[in-house]
Image (cartoon, rainbow, N blue to C red; front, side, top):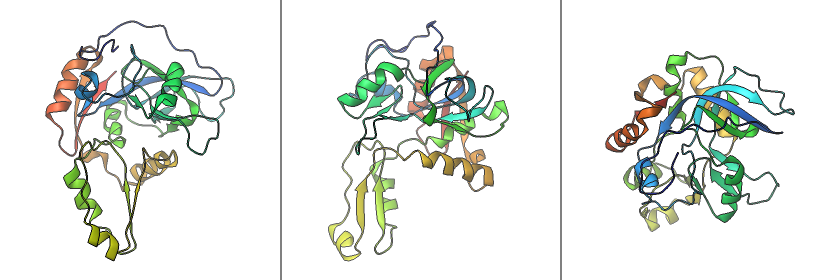
Length: 254
């Protein structure tokens, strides 16, 4: 539980969540600790987050219980939980929040009133549309599946990737790069390259990523995973901050 920015999270006993219509409770098996988690907790990033809150964006786990209107999920199913929550009112630009992590604007804070608590807990309540079955897995490999939520890249690799786009290509910028990203004007203009921003991926991307893993095209075995128990959450945060390299993953194991 994070009570105050600038103070480490604490381990506490909370009331078990109960799912309502359109909701699912998941027994969390593993949750990724992002390399910049320390900057979220100490307030450096100034994320919109109502406190106190159980932090943690995204999880791998098993369905514990579902709301009365859920038919495609059953207790015991292995699932991945997408932290990108969107308002359900059909607005052209929906309110968005990252569960247990941040909100895009004040509207996202309203979503936190119901789904504020994140994945650094034994159980998590989340909307059914954010829960995606991954099929049976070895429980010992649960943390490795957290690699579906990659760490943020810096401006240098993002720029290098953008410059590989061919003529009439498209560059989509998504993620938490804090510094400006310089792209050469003449290259953009002469190659008719389109650049657009995208705050988080669409829900269907979860299904495509799962397919890539199941087909063997995305090998999760290349990731070096370091696991910590829930009681050692601060040690996990410190480890993630000091190991921000590619293909290294820090995770809580519950």
